[in-house]
Image: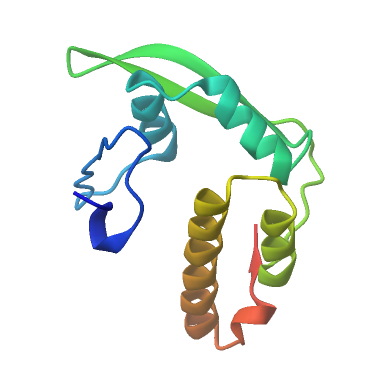
Amino acid sequence: MTGGPAGGPAAPDGALAWLDVTAGVSGDMLLGAFVDAGAELAALQHRIDGVLPGAVRLERSEVLRAGMRATKVDVRLLRDDLPHRSWAGIRARLLDSGIDAPVRDRAVAVFARLAAVEGRVHGVDAEDVHFH
């Protein structure tokens, strides 16, 4: 296989993950699943700090759900004053973050799509959408 799903990049080792989240998925459990699968929590924290320095701390814990062990990653706010950010501001932070280009470009594409959908729902231009 030369790439990931929908023509996206494959992992450096060729590994792929298929997520069926038709019933929804919580962010803490999804992050936990990635950490359980081998993602380094410190590396995730470093990437977040590159975009939002000093804003959040990731905390790992083990939980039991329906008789099965799982890793949960909680996102703890370190500040009360996290501002609402415009799509333009988020894009600028991502572009200046130092995140590897394929990951950064995917994040920009995801936020662009979110901004377009939020803009349509709220009747504003995507550039005027604020995330909180």
